[in-house]
Image 1 (cartoon, protein in one colour):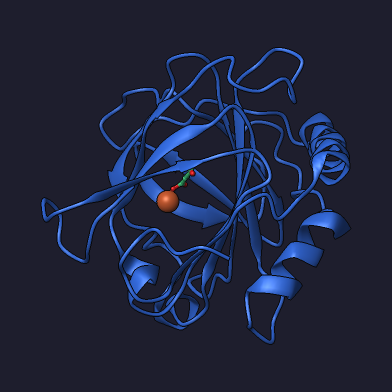
Image 2 (spheres, protein in one colour):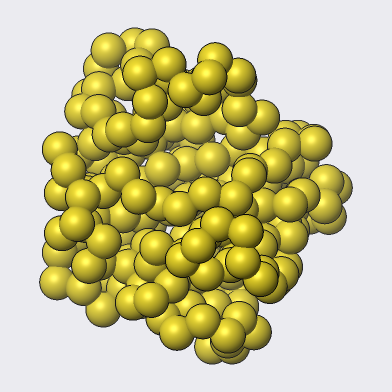
Length: 206
Ligand code: SIN
Ligand code: FE2
């Protein structure tokens, strides 16, 4: 484990998943996306996000003009979300140091040019904030940025590569973070290129 970021509760395991583990996780996520297709969420202000998303688990994260929240059903198909794949749960159980399994496995897909603005993961309810966020990166590398608890403070950058697993717990749990850019074509894991990020969270707001 390495900790290039100096905020307490931030942990990064480089290449926690080997090539075979990455490939089988992509296959498991492909099956999730067959049942729960990727969609382009809109922000509260009606702008399409550049990242496409879907979820697995008890609840999924959605965004539209009504705002950011968790829902028990897919916003387009109306179906309950598929189960979180076992290989994903296995990573959580190894690194989260938390007694419960996550309620939401959010899957983000970054195609060429996609990025994510600075934000906090703050829709899980106070009891959900006690648990860490675990994030798994697959495919092309990303320049990830993390700050502190206030918007606009100093930030640090770290490159997240395929197979890396990041944990944001303790003081890092509510830190501002985002993805500046994806180094498109930097990995051969995904046939069409791009990056998948999986985030696991305990949700107590729904
Ligand atoms: C997120 O903050 O939801 C995604 C972070 C990432 O893609 O690494
Ligand atoms: Fe986030």
